[in-house]
Image (cartoon, rainbow over the protein chains, first blue to last red):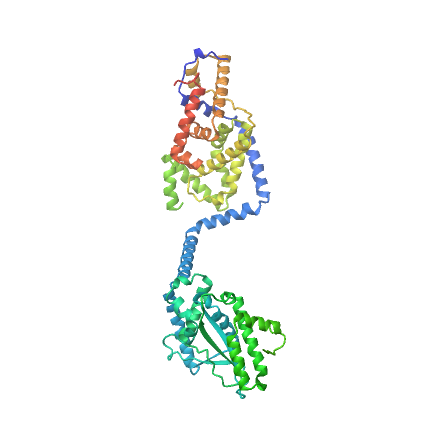
Length: 303
Length: 211
């Protein structure tokens, strides 16, 4: 043990500099080089896992392209946000554009647009979904046309765009189209409603008449809009599947009348029309379910 | 080297000598990246002693230091295709070595086994030791050995980060900016750690150093 009284003190930096003098012998480096060479060869021969091999290259590539990728992401996000929050008047403009295209198509087709029954059945749920927003109830009345010369399964509608400049037939029949979209955009809260709003606007602006041009023995479907009271039926408030179910029920009823049409008199027809028009949705549903129409059973409907 | 990397490199390299050294290294690295892997031996021979010294002063164990130095060079060789010249090669290599040493020290926190290299008592070392004591012969050797142990014990009492800063600044002679780049921290942090570490060493080595 050194005697500390004899030590002449130096600075800390000078003491630390002594550490620089701790060096290995020259022969140490020969051994070091040999071992390093062996380890290097082993590292080259060893199979590296894929996350060390490929992930590094991928990350390097992404790091190079981070500015363009980030800019593209921001642009996409902006586009989506603008598209989602587009105002209803902008939707009107889009609808007007599609209306022009549709009008041109109607001119080409001799001012008549032929809509298949499939499309009709697709539109029925949409119109029956309307009461959710506007407290209006649409009821479907089916009546049988006894014209014997036509067996067509298609229903032909007349397109009269020029004659229905204001609220069109569809717009009048479904008041929510005119009020909910044009006036109170806040009611279009759900994105689902917003998504098919342009389609409904097209329908309104085109002026499609729901009143059929019955020239054959087809089914006349007339959509009547009636103002509902504040306490609506629960079934009417349901959108989507329940409303499509209603449309299906109406078509079943129509089919039932179609089969009975030949042997029914005009008086009986009128009575049935009145009875059906007075049926509430619940009654219509329960009646049809009771006689098994919903299950694809018989087509006879008796009251 | 692209202009941006060159500008950044200039801010990180302290002296013109270091800048010239960095340019030379970059040329060698480019050759290695192009496929002349034999040129990597030039870099190994150039930096092996400095890298070994850093790791040895951090670990105070010569066997561990040798292994970690070899590992650092192997890692550098395997990753050399990712080196883009954004810093000088020796800074990049130091970073690999320091990170490897820090991981090793954290893994073996409880295992402290020292094995020291011999102090080559010549030139500057001789002068410092002569300033410390008048002893000669066997007593002088005993004194140097005792001083070395005390010094290494005091260094081991520092935290890993403080020890690394002291080693890089006082022993290896890196600038504050270079240490900040190697340790991935700010220059202020480097200065703060250095100040704290010196205070602690001063109190531990008060028998040998003047306040």
